[in-house]
Image (cartoon, rainbow, N blue to C red):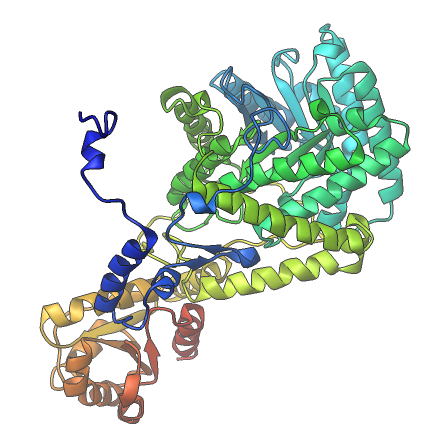
Length: 627
């Protein structure tokens, strides 16, 4: 140590780095990538990423990007945590979902989960779940004073709630010690079904349930503010937040209008959000949700003690894939971690096979053990707001909160959540968002591992018993793999009909070093559509390609080489392939100045990073199916 720098002698020996210096280093890297014109701030902008909701993620955040004071955990605006201790005392609530229609089977899975790490039960009741009359059997053996029960009963919420409250009383445990959520969500039901014929009666029934819970069972919340219908219809993070705020405000109006005090009304709501594999966006979304709701509660006159938002995070169904479903384990692990770091009070990790039907015992075990590892081995809950203080997370939280508040104000300006649902305003906004995202998916700007990137055609399909059909009629339910799933289904149909998948011959030209990268690119692209690739022999030339193509059994071909080799051989090889009967000839790479020359020789289309993969693959299947 020295007298000048007693604490950091090593750091003191180096000059301070500034943003301009970092930008100059970036400029050097960009020049090597062919982006010579990007200098200064433009170099930084070249590395930025645009997210939905007008949010732009920059490559570097510093103390200059810090936001206003965030307060302390457990105090308004609750960005850092809803409780002073966060989840450090007992961890978050590990909540597993159950969708069996048979009460006995539901009971078996409920008990298995509770015996192996799950701390609360999320049970579908009524249409698409166990009958209300079977609720007692489904919960047989469950200690209702220890395990919270959360209902998802759709239009049957009143009857299911009455039955659950009866079971609480019959169990002998004091009703005031019961915990859970009765799951009344009339506006969420409207979003799911599009049917508002009984909305007023349902809101009144939910208000009566809330008053009873406030008086007799303060640990039980009557209403769920479920934002999943909007996420599952393709909504962005800000749209999910904005609709949840509008729904929560509508419920507060109903509850206080029915005579419940504002504090008691706030305590009757539990909010449900999706957790995705975009870990930072999920963390920021949950933090922003608490901040936004704290502002709503403050304006409504609620006390700070009643203003903290109770959150239930559920791993996204939109991100789950039906092909190569094993990758879903990785997605749900990241999503579960994000939910915990974001401060969710309860977390549901959906089994990796949930998109295929009823999850089996192995999938349920993996789902609950994912949370056990996060809690018990990674000690993720032992730190309050572990992402707090990150300049990036704080900035993202702030931007997301502002975008969500603007959307909330639009809904309120349109007459509130019910009016915005009835008019189609919300449906139209979500559809526009999903359309833009669909473009990104089709162009593989948003890759889906195992589906649009690195597909495995030889992967044996995973079959599950069909799950009950979810209620519908309102907002659609989308998945990221939808377009590619349709392509793969067409390939499966050809395999079933002919015994072989459609094939593409990859005509590799020139030395291995000049064609390997584009062979790998083309194989990845075509296999994403269920089109098998044949690349042997390699390389080929104009004299040998016709025989190789005939042996491959393919009907279409794709040239793969460097731009230099294309200039020397592509035209002749394309012509030879067309003469050999190729229905379509693709070229891996951008067309550049020789487009017309290559097209005249027989090249029908060019495939490259950023091209519309869905259109390329769909048209290729069209040609082969017609043939």
